[in-house]
Length: 443
Image (cartoon, rainbow, N blue to C red):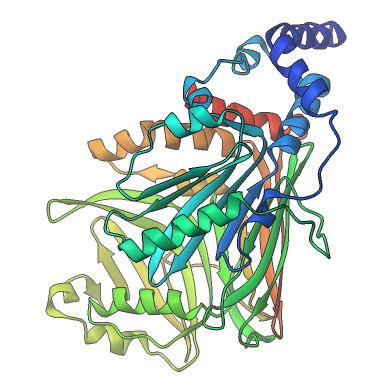
C-alpha cells in the first residue's frame, strides 16, 4: 500500500506541475552555469550583500519535490503555479539570481536589489513607491535602491551614480572563488565595527539547513576558559538557549542607554546565558506590555552588586522590587534574582534554577527549540489576537517540526568561525517544507 500511495502522490504532483516546472527544470537548468555572479557588479565596499542563487534553490526544491517528497493532495495543491501579475509587470527574471544589498554613506542608509531583466520596458513602466526610490536599468540588469524620504540630494545623486555604474559594469570572476551556498551573505564592516570581512553560506540537503561562515574581529577576543556559573541545559521546560561572549560596543551602548532610563548603570557584559521559555502579554498601567519568560545569567567585566543597584532605583520603579525576597515584579510576572559571584548575577522566572559551576569558555550560541519564542501567555484579547496572526500561527506550525537547532560562533584571537544546523524530522525535506511555509503566506 505504501508503494502505491507514493506512486499516487507522485502522480498528483506531476499533474499539477508538469508544464511550469518541467520547463524550468529542463530548459533553464540545463544551460551552462556562469560562475560569475551579479554580486561582482556591485562596488567592493558595499556594507552588506545577500546573494540568493535562485537557480540552485529552485533546482534543489524540484529534485526534492519530484523525486523524494511524499505529499498529500492538500500539500501538493500549494505548488500549483499561479502567474504572479506583479512579478510579470516588474519585467525581471527572479529564477536565476537575486542580489540584495544594504549600505551607508554620509550617515544615510540605503537598501537595494540587483535583478536580471526579462523585459526592460515593463521594468521602466513599473511604479515604485517612495519619494527617493532610484530605478535604473539596461537590457540585462535592473537596480532598485530605496532611500529615506528625507534623504539629501547629495545622497540621491551618490546612489543614482552607483546604480548606473553597477548595470554598466562587466561581471568578473573572483580570483579566489569561494564556494557559495544557496544563499550567501557578505559583510564588509570597518575598523570601528566588532566584526568585518564576514562570509556566511546557507545550504540545504534533505531535511537539514547547513550554515557555515567566517569573519575577522577588529579586536582580539577576550574570551578565555575559566570557572563560570551556568544554567543546566537539562531543564524540562521547552526553551531556546542563547549564549554570547563579549557584546559588540554598539549593542552594549544601546542596552546601557535603555537600562539607564530606570536608574541602573551596569559595567560591560563579558558574557551571558539565557533560556527563553516564551512571552507573556500583560497590562501595565493601562498599556499592553510584552514580558519575556526567561532565566538569565549575566557576567560583567567588573564587580557588580545587584542588591546595591536595585536599592538605588528611581522612585517610580522601587515598588517593583522586594529586596528581602529577592524578587522583581513586573505586572503578573515575578523575576527572581541572585548574586552568583562578584561579577555574575541570575535573573529569571525560576525560583530555584538549576545552576552548576564548571570550566567553560563563553561563545556565541543559539540552540534548542525555536517554538519557545512563540509560546504566548496572557488572558487579554491582545494575547489571543497575537496567537492567531498568520505570521505567528504558521511559523509555530513550521518550527514544531524542527528536531535540532544549533548555531555556534567561536572566537580565537581575531578570528570568528560560524557553524550551524537546523534539522527537520527524518521524513521531511527542508526545501519542500520551506516552500510550503512561504506559499501558505501567499495563498
